[in-house]
Length: 206
Image 1 (cartoon, helix red, strand yellow):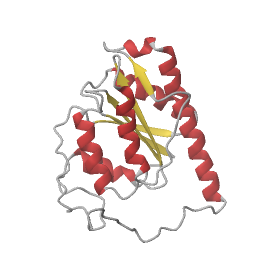
Image 2 (image 1 turned 90 degrees about the vertical axis):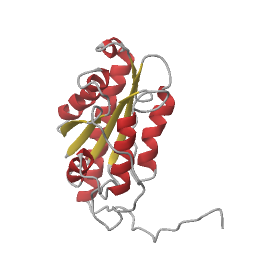
Image 3 (image 1 turned 120 degrees about the vertical axis):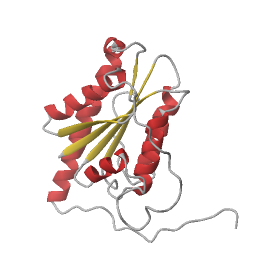
């Protein structure tokens, strides 16, 4: 089993990386393979709503790191997206990345998802909620911890002093490993995801 972790911070080895790495270490300790992707420093287009990805493939019309990520999603079992808090939300780079990845992606359903946010003082709750919305519109089980998945720190490395936050990250990794193993055990017993219904779309202006 494998989990992809995505760092939406422009700082490659900053506090977001440290928090995600704590999650990754916990997953690895339970036998789950991990891979960390750094996207926060990239110049990523936002989703244009062009519909070019709607042909049933698994790629955006703009061929960049989003498509490199999507190539890995079919073989992944879980995802963790991390971001610093910018104006009570996630980083612009991660927002663009997630919009395009989830709009074009075809391999998220029934795979585990978790969001992680880092801030100096405030704005963490709406940022955390922002990431979770991608999971709950994509039929993904959302993994929780002992507290909301957030760590506090400003200068690089300060998150290590947030003992509760780092413990929350470790437990998040442990909980995701446990849930992944439960899903795999169910799969081996013949338990499969529910059959999809034909999608209904209601427009409230008609």
